[in-house]
Length: 512
Ligand code: HXC
Image 1 (tube, rainbow, N blue to C red):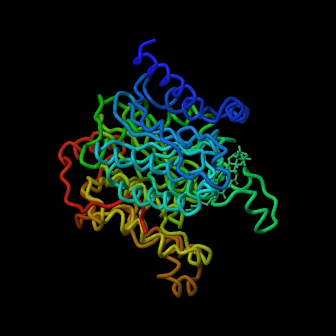
Image 2: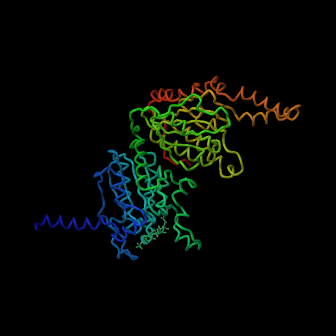
Image 3: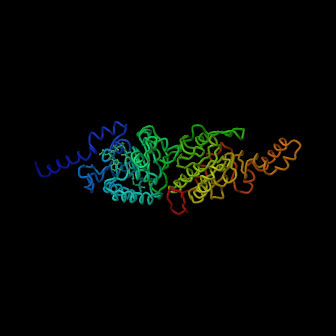
């Protein structure tokens, strides 16, 4: 055999051992949990076929003591490289749980850092697939500094290239803090767990018994904590949603989002889309579907703070971000979680040149000691900050109620909206007619011969005077009043003239 062919054979032997990850037994264990291997996730579920260019497969872990010399850690437990999603380039890393539980040691972190720097240099999205027990215990401070360097880059890349995290296993410590710094987190039913320390550590430190699912299962994180944005029933579904999300996003903050053909909605809005009874709820997602291209709306954070709806859609082919009050849940009030949810989404859209459409129907900020003590002042301020800071085109449609602070907060002209329209049934005032009449005419109501009749009369008077869009339109705070059926064509006109001129300063995704 020639020297060249010997070297090729030697290479192939080494390659096949590396490609096996943690070996057959560990892979079988992974499969039994219903999980794909890291390589299957990257090559079969995420990237376009044959597009993966792997790097650093031959990197070896550097720490040989504390029992580590007994182990062969293929690729040091992480697969890294570049590939394409729907023919658009991305950088990717996938932690391999079959190798030391995907734990992060020095070499592992250096591999991730290399593709993060590669994503920054090329201006392409970074996708992290996390399946890891966190900092590798045996490597001590070396693994901690590895995480520190990743967090540093997550932050520097924030608002520069989109960063997406898919949680596909029991992720602990740094394996959840890095995703928390990224833009969107995906979880899968019965596969994803997120916690700072796992059940074994909790048992040791606190003596408490708790399962991984109870501690931080997928549904917990999309509905209660809000740590995750997208929930899927399977790994395949999670990756399909991720690909759809990418289709709305530019590769980096210097580019505009990809434009497609304009497709009208399946069911355009009629003028009577809002119920006659002003106290009656309706679903704002039906309104959204009546406005956007092909009635196609990718909702973000669907299960968290459902009184606020946010997500991506297209208008005349151009991606937009939608922020909408949901009258069907808590009458669409603004509270702590809804404020956080909206503010973060607004910041993301502003980073990546995605125009914002705000649909308003809210009675205001939620009153009460619970919310006050949960910091509704601090959290509510984030919406004010995020809208004021945003320099993308900001279009607002007042559908019904826009009362008090919420009128201002939901992208009013005063926070720099590009265009504000109201439907004829819009109500713009300091507070709703009932509350207002009770306060203003308290003494008169008490002294009236028939207090209830007098109260109703005062409510009617207030409604006529204030609970309409004309006072605001008279003063130019609302640019125009349109019928609901005109919403889509009006917004398309606005979008076609606003362009993409940027006046703002760069910022990341996390509202402080
Ligand atoms: C080294 C680890 C490891 C870790 C798991 N393994 N986590 N090795 N360092 N952090 C290894 C196990 O020893 C085992 O090796 C293999 O991975 C599979 O782990 P199992 O425990 O058998 O799997 P499972 O029962 O599914 O439990 C998964 C787990 C649990 C919940 C993640 O392993 C666990 O609790 N690990 C510790 C989690 C943790 O507290 N990490 C530190 C976080 S602190 P063998 O050889 O037996 O197959 C941190 C610092 C950064 O990350 C903080 C930033 C703010």
